[in-house]
Image (cartoon, helix red, strand yellow):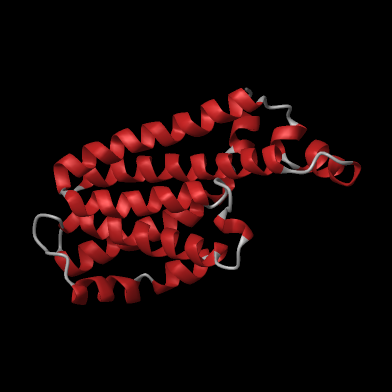
Length: 193
């Protein structure tokens, strides 16, 4: 697969939607707790970026896979959807999607061993929303709450994980601290909505 096709398949242009809450969460942690764990932060950035690309690839792949095969849909299948336009095989689309998600998962699990179980629960929620946004029998994106889950997960969870990775060793997660992070992540949430 040519790099240009790969970048279109994973919708690289939309990566800013993950970068904004990552940067804001890191700034929040530094401003409020005066510390950054740069190594862990870099790994989290890589993992979240890979998973964002995997989610976009899954969305494109699922749209192509489940689109009705009729005359009305031929334009979408052959001229709009990146899988059809570039004749990406279903096997190749799956390999890229699950490969990106798998690498992200390995990095994430290693970070859990270094920072603690709260990251596991945050990550499981994020991975579930990422997959079920376009996958499964009833994709979230096709319901009335698709953008809510997408905006909340990307805007708040990425922000919160960035805060947690930088403060896991000095600040406990409490209802009060979580509410403060939720309020602070409001800009990122609404940008992602």
